Length: 92
Image (cartoon, rainbow, N blue to C red; front, side, top):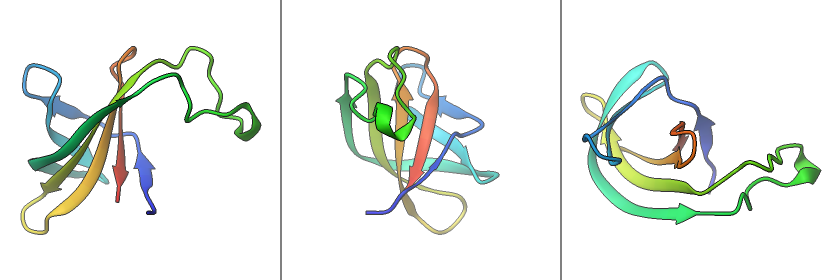
C-alpha cells in the first residue's frame, strides 16, 4: 500500500479526540466513516538509520477514515501524536 504523508493545516475534532473534518491539499474534507482506530507506541516507526529517529517520540493514535469534499469519497489515515497533539494525514 502506498501512502502520501501530509501534515494538515487543521483537523477539527468532535470536542473530544475523534477527528470530524480536516484540510488536505487545500480542500476541506468531512469524515463520513471511521473504518478503524488504533494506537502505536514506542517510536518504532523512527529508525536512526533513516535519519528520522527522535528519542522523545511517544504513543500515537491513528484513525482510518472515509472522507470527501463535495463529491468523491476517499480513504485516509489520520495520525495524532498523543504528546504534542500534532496531526498527520496519509492518503491511501
